[in-house]
Structures are given as C-alpha cells and as structure tokens.
Length: 76
Image (tube, rainbow, N blue to C red; front, side, top):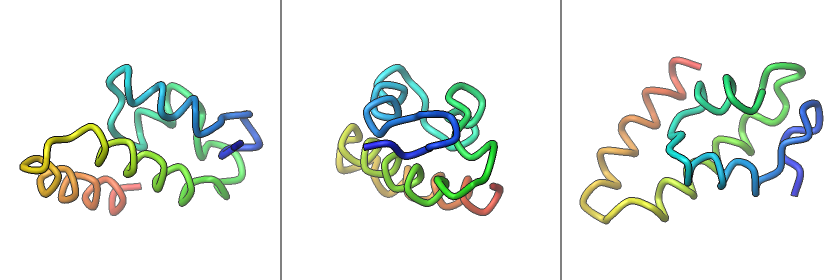
C-alpha cells in the first residue's frame, strides 16, 4: 500500500528501511521523504513504523521503544 503519495513511499519501503536500521520518523523523513510535502501520510507512516518496531523488539524492550516513540511524536 502507498503510504506517502507525494514521494511514492509504500509500507514495504518503510518496513525495508526499519529492517535496515531506521527507527524514527526523522530518519524516515530524511531517507524516504515521508511527511516532507503535504504531510497527510504522517499518521499512517507512524503506525507502520510502530508496527515494525513492535514486531522486531523483544517483549522486554517494547516498553522502552514505546517511550522513545512517544518522545519522537511530540518532537515532530
């Protein structure tokens, strides 16, 4: 599914980016252009990012990631 129409970024590209080590919206913005034009994709991109991080992290780290994720949302 296309998440960012302006920059033609799919959920697959976001998942691939997370697999390659990206873990924040700012990294996705810098490397994929997520949210740099109209901004309508931000909430969907954040959801995909969160899902990917949750699936990668061991249960013990999920709480810490949730805290970091919340901080990145507030900063964006």
